[in-house]
Image 1 (cartoon, rainbow, N blue to C red):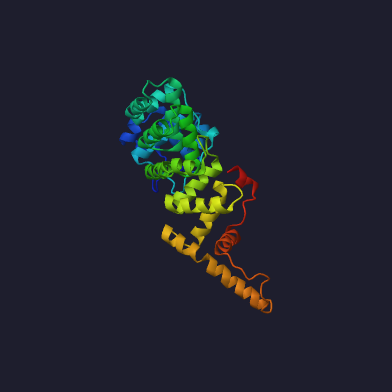
Image 2 (tube, one colour):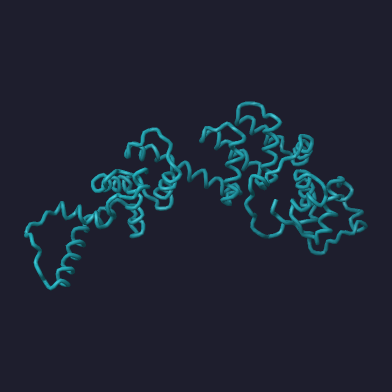
Length: 324
């Protein structure tokens, strides 16, 4: 683990000074080994370092650190948590897990996880759940909320999948209860519109690519567009692009967002003014060319409007768009 812990100001590791304290009287051998290891590390060290110096497993070292934190002898260093890799999600033995579960009162949390899964947990699953709480530093409510999301929203009743999602969220900095709630809310909002996008683009039941999922999150979350605006982008895509793709519509929506267009009426007003803007540009170009008249006297408004859209958004020739 990357968090560092330090002895509080004014606290020194002189055992006589701790003799009359309940913390010392109730400390286990593991707790004392960690306290001594902390003093040997210059009073600041991560759980990883303390684990190696004391010869304790990561789970036992983390439990001892929690003991001294609760006793008010040590405190967490005030710096941001670093994301963990899968290699850092170390797991203890069944005996170590049992000790941590008892000391940290995790039985209710594990019972809640079993209820979400609809079955009893096996030893390996308990091992993973305990490791997630201690290695990633998340709360019990975080764990049960994330498991419920995986099972009931994503349809994944696999603890290994939960571990993968937890590690990914940790790398993205989503480690607090509020951050997780916001992440789930954002996911559900985007995917509540996914069916409409699928029907509009004729995507069928195939899984969306990571790139396409990122587009939908931009449209509905970052840009804040509703389906009316998305539909307008689809109409332009269908009328001007060589192939109707999400990627082509993404370019249109990105342009509207950059121009500050937020609602369908604003988009329609912008599009209605496109011929006038294009004609103004044509007039300026004619003046710069010496006032020569164009070779044809006819003017087709619809063709002119389509040309204006093509100049704004171009033809869909990007190979990645052909796949989207």
